[in-house]
Length: 110
Ligand SMILES: [Zn+2]
Image (cartoon, rainbow, N blue to C red; front, side, top):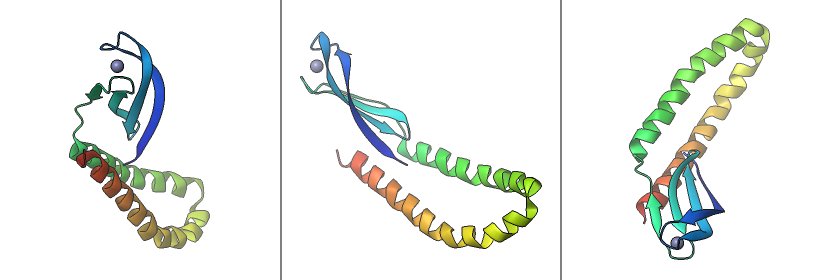
């Protein structure tokens, strides 16, 4: 789960003009748009848990496929790589979980 933010000029229906908007993305999808001029906010109806579930599901299901593909290409290389991957996994998983926790806090904290 990743949050990214950007400022861009969009048409505001309250200001009736192109104004600077603050746009927040969650996992590449627009989550919130705020007009910097009048502070009018548009929040997208996004189910955080559903997004999280979809992401985790995608991660789990894409893994065996990737491994199988790599195995077909170069079985020896994979055998060499595998211990390294297994070792790096808890770190990556922790990083992912922390990232997700931060995103969740940010969204719920408003
Ligand atoms: Zn506005």
